[in-house]
Image (cartoon, rainbow, N blue to C red; front, side):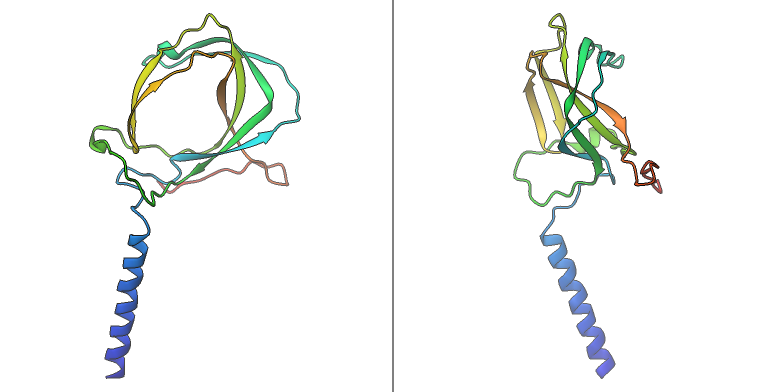
Length: 168
């Protein structure tokens, strides 16, 4: 009888823990993938350099190509791979079945502010869709406040890069 009661108690605890766990989170979503998001942290960089770059958008988004952009070294953002868990969302969602599966990010990104030539022209509006719904974006035509994010890796004390490895 004691064994039966202890098994029943253990089952009740397991069910209660499962209920508590699912009630606090709406999950990460069917199409969520581990480390498919970025968490970005503002930082100050004291390493001086000078860089003038062109950014060639892929063939599907050529309208977003930028020419003659000066990279500003002082204030940056360090963005690291993260897994998002939605705790609460009260907005309108989109049909995720029409989108390809997200991809994991295997490295950090270091994002620099940049100033680009005023001759650049990108679309003024862009409709986008993501897990938090559809958004009709108005894109600012301020070429003094853009960012470029480049692949980066945090270094260990030994100088070796922190490399993320995934099972998938």
